[in-house]
Figure 1: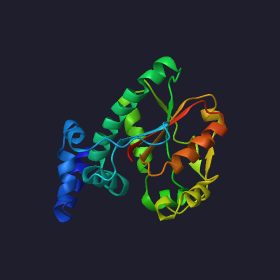
Figure 2: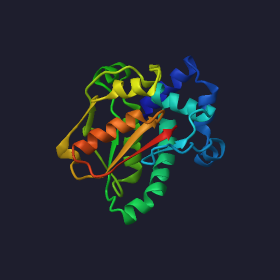
Figure 3: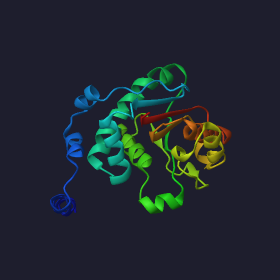
Figure 4: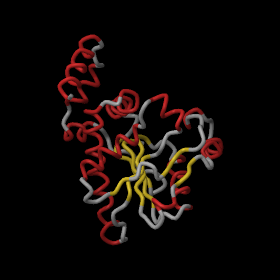
Length: 218
């Protein structure tokens, strides 16, 4: 089956050549990425952290390749880097704040958007992190948080008040899965933090203990 997949990919690459910049990112080592992509600026809410600056050309191209092309090579590289970043940032939390065996939860998409795209990029990242971790530090729950309201993209809205109103009550949490548990929210990009904030509020209202959010870029 893998050989068939490789053959199909090979044929598609001949017929529809990849963007050369995407190919370059695929061929970069994790060290190359760390050396060439600036760290994200600190987010005002210290419960949310991002790995890279989104305005950087490499990180922006990589995230678009994940978001719109489901690029597995880039998902694997960037999820691996995010995994190490999460462990580094949570070392003290896990040791001193009883932030034990947290649940990875990807920011969900509304079912209509999911049907149109065919996958949720945040879920792909979360699943790869869990795969790398092999269950040593994290659990994962893909159905713990759902998006129940279809909303315009946050970037289409003019100001903070509109963004807050847009996402209000748009998520629903499964109490049985998250009650009294620590949560790590995973997203591809944190822009204003409004999405993370609404998702965190929904989880806390449903009984989660502590919620921390991580993304590839900001």
